[in-house]
Length: 273
Image (tube, rainbow, N blue to C red):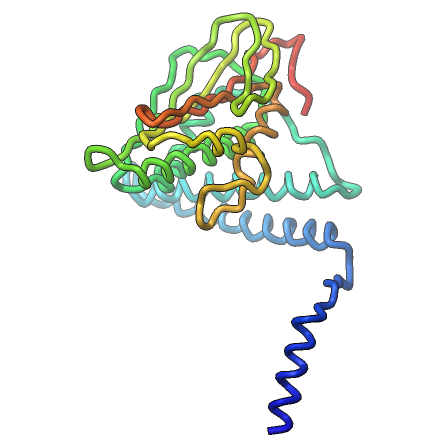
């Protein structure tokens, strides 16, 4: 009995007098860089095995298509790990590379993964413009943005289905204008001196509340039970890093449309990586 009483007193004391957390060993950044490095190695092995499966599978079969999708997803994850290592710093950190990119190509290569995150009862409509101009971009980051927008749209479409099922539209196009465009939630956008390429994701949900619109890009803000509030701030950071803008239109009647616009490629004006 005395032993049990001592244990309870010790538990009560620990709850009333919590110790500040301490971290021993290497700095957190060093540990995270090492974890990202090790994870990239494991993902590289998965990528190689998926490529082998793709090469040995018969043409035009689900196995071959799934293997291709797995390989692309693993390759993208490796690039994210490398970006994480770079952003955490260190002697080998390097700027994120940019290159001349075709947004339609980025979308097409991401489609197997995009389809895998969309619920069965939700229709994914892909509407790609013809003869789309090129942009200066990091394709891995654009893919990350597109995946985040589609996942959010799927959440909205499944939560508020209409006529037995929701719908998501992924569209690309060209904005032919000169002027200023504003980000969603009243954030200032970029000046485009000429045409811009855009990709947008539209959903059939019930739209955003005023609070959601206002806080959409705030770190930590989320409307999902299991959310962390990191996705949309990352979207905004990436698109701004491409000298682009993010615009949001949302209402209860038509759902939500989020559009990311990037300046068309000109050799004299490329975004810094």
